[in-house]
Length: 68
Image (cartoon, rainbow, N blue to C red):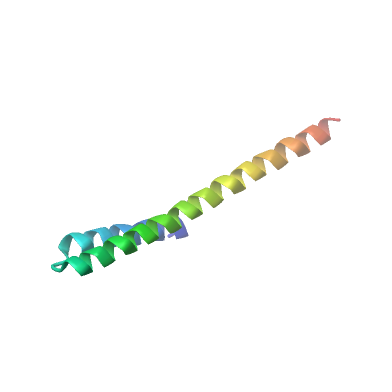
């Protein structure tokens, strides 16, 4: 299981727990936790996208140098 999958799984678990929580304060705590897990997942996704862009840029640059 990747880090991203783990974060999404935890967010889903918190969402299910929030739906079943009998008390408002407990439900709110689970919803805050769910949002925190989703935020961490978005950070991982953003980092992956930046790494992919950087790798593509480096590959394009090295292709241009090799062709010269």
